[in-house]
Length: 252
Image 1 (cartoon, rainbow, N blue to C red):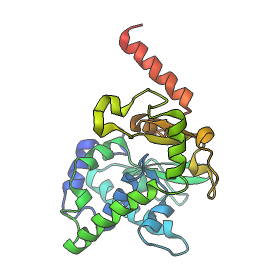
Image 2: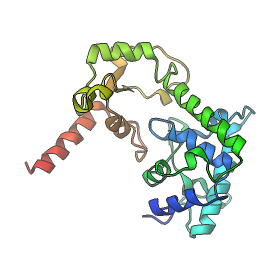
Image 3: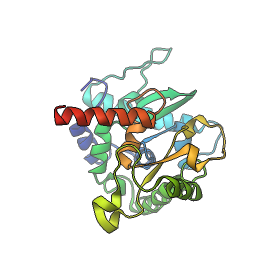
Image 4: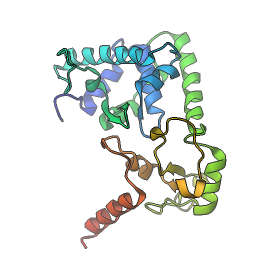
């Protein structure tokens, strides 16, 4: 583990320590975790939190930077990046980050994702007051739903037409949820955009057959792997990786 990040065990300790994580920082975690690929821009996070001033990303940068500074002092770790004035970019301790098509993204690292999903912080048991916790649970359930139904990524009509054409099996690994999980897996599949929505500056028309493909959640996550500082893998590239791994496992 590099010295600029926390281990999974350290993240578990951080998430369980009362008072270390503010309600606003917990809210930022919840927003990014609700994204299918665990990444989002500072500006969109700020707007989801209700900040609508001219530069909302400044607010979230401040919250994350202050939290990263706490972690730096607690674990004696250093960020990889520094501003032109020599000051450290403390967000790097908290999240992975990269610029894509002129837009900067934050992403949860795998160690944080695992610790977060096993923690109680999603219901804020040790952070903030009871009134805030109750409101926050309702708010974030709603925000997660809205993200999946936007015109950009989860248009239900486009999704249906894509599935009607390609079927319910993952086009990468072939997983068919109903066959594997029975009734509870019926009608379950993700839909992947071949042209990343993040590259679009505004709403655009989607061709369900040309632009979308059904994929399982695992393959969807790998197509958008946050460890890549590049565009998503193509369906063909990920298929090739899967085939090679299967060959290696079988000893061929």
